[in-house]
Image (tube, rainbow, N blue to C red; front, side, top):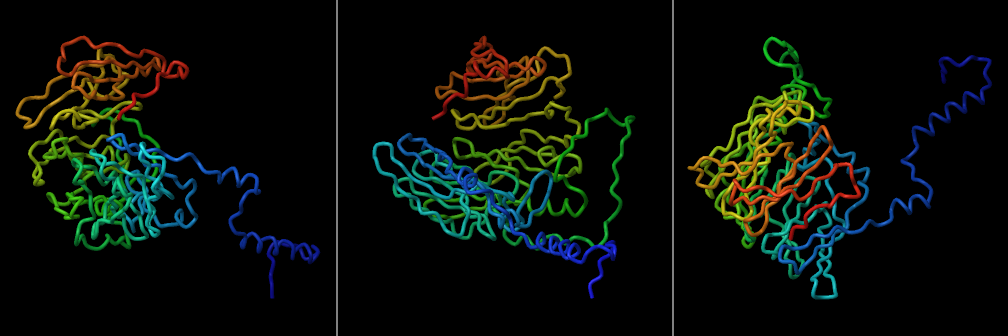
Amino acid sequence: MIVCLGVPLRRPLASVAAVLLLVQLHAQDPYQKPPKAIQEVLDAPAPPSFHPSPSGDTILMADLERYPSIRELARPMLRLAGARVDPRTRSPHRTPRVISLRLKRIAEARDIAVALPANARMGPPHWAPDGRHFAMLGVTDHATELWIGDAQSGRLRKAPGLKLNAAFGNPLDWVGGGALLCLAVPANQGPTPIEPTAPMGPRIQEHDPAKGKAAPIRTLEDLLLNAHDEALFSYYATSQLVRLDVASFIQTPLGKPGLIENAQPAPDGKHALLHILHKPFSYLVAAREFPVRIEVWDAKGSAIHTVADLPLAEDIPIQGVRKGPRSIHWRPTEPATLAWVEALDGGDPKAKVPHRDKVMMQAAPFAIAPKELAKLQHRFTGMEWGEYRDLLVLKEFDRDKKWTRTWFTDPREPSSEPRLVFDLSSQDAYRNPGAFVQV
């Protein structure tokens, strides 16, 4: 017996059948495709991405997948601290996929096809500084793997037994041409935290102007919601720093596992710059605003210098920046010299100050205090280092006027007068000179 609620008995039976049939058809409809003419436009191959080697004699040409499959989009994911993570592979929920890769030596006419593994979604290549090898991430159904390619033959080899943690950042960086620093899934980490059947306590948000100044609340997705989310974030963000020898694939663990956001080796190969997150976490901001300790480690994995230990940053003004050192990196033309930027206005773009940012530099062994390289009237937006140690390119942005300026300065002579190179509206597309080419 079929009972149709809300359908008057006097309505023709054919109408009732039509309604039921329509509901049934909608329930069984598969995903639809556009007409053939539109489908051909959507499926037209995109131009390949080019990855020239540092030596300048070889180019990798990669064809990227334009649209992810329904199967990939349907994979389970966790929304943690501003990121969407695939818990099975410790990678972002959606990763770029190279569907074909060709190796081209500029002096030769022919291309060498690089055979990609069939069971992995391969990411873009990362060249070694000497141009002899390149590294690629391969995401399978259960792990993120590391593959090393040979620049002569194009042959790929998988690093055996190594599972990378790419959930919250780039998990690899080259140490010279013969080794890699990798963020690996810790061995014997234990089971995934189990969600409690009942919350541990109420979720409390307190606003008391008497205890501090007002701060904006941004609308952000995928933030932590409760203590279980905190436990999941700690679990999936924990990595073991590993040094991998490319020739032998020998893995050497460095230090202890931690919430390592990234690890950047110094040009001398004897130091590494680490960003390590720590509690207290926040339910209001993403992981990039969590407390972070910035350390320099030696080649054995011991912390030898603390650059900064930045507190939780829930009070960053709209269009403002974090207090303390930021954009910390190794100077590429020195063995082990750090450079960074610090706000002079408390990170507040509305503050009236003669200069908003200063550029700092400090060399290993970090016994001498940092020295100031330059001050910027407006907000710092980037720096680039010249090859011959006499050039530092600094960029700044005036929020009120929507204006950009680019300066050339000599880092060897901080007291020298910088030279203004570009001075134009950020909205002036016709006069925009573009970006500096790096080789």
